[in-house]
Amino acid sequence: MPQSDIKSELRRKFRAKRDSFVANLTGGEAAIAFSCLPSPLAQMCSPGKTVAGYVAIGSEADPAKLLAAAADQGCALALPYVTSKASPMRFLRWQVGDPLDKGPFGLSQPRADAPEATPDVVLVPLVAFDVQLMRLGQGAGHYDRALSVLGDSTAVGIAWSVQQTDNLPLDPWDMPLDAVLTERSWISQ
Image (cartoon, rainbow, N blue to C red; front, side, top):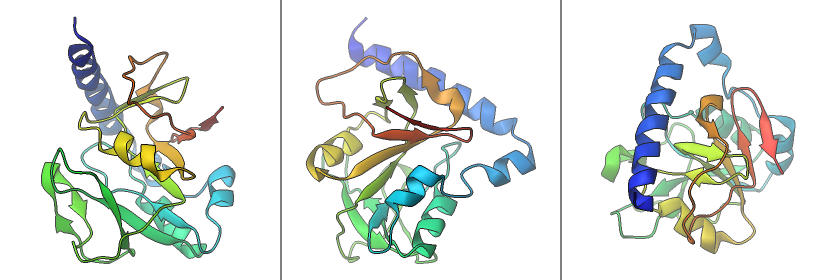
């Protein structure tokens, strides 16, 4: 089976697993998940740093409270801005409460005229991650391309614990994460 087919099947499997997990969370469990910055992430979110996140879609782990906490610590915020599958993703400045526009692929993103930002910390969505901190994304490669040019930025995957697996198939362009935050733990090498 070609690698692209294996990855597509893994996406289907882990999306279903994630959907089921989130559907079975109690109200209290959902309310406290990702509700505060764990110590390692709080240390990265010092005043003046720029933290990029995303607006969760469906059952994705939602970093909204993490972004609000980073802003409370004096960080500037940014969100991804995408125009097409082939175009590079950019990060644009955003503040909690700012209006969002509808983007491709069901994304909510800052207005096109928002200032561009270079994030120090990138909170990264994912479909699955493995023990080597590699991620399986949606398949368009936006985050892999963005992370490959950000240099000193720290990439932190935001995921539910059920999205972890032992090993993911890798392509040469796949970019590793520096850490993963789940509702249960901080995972780093």
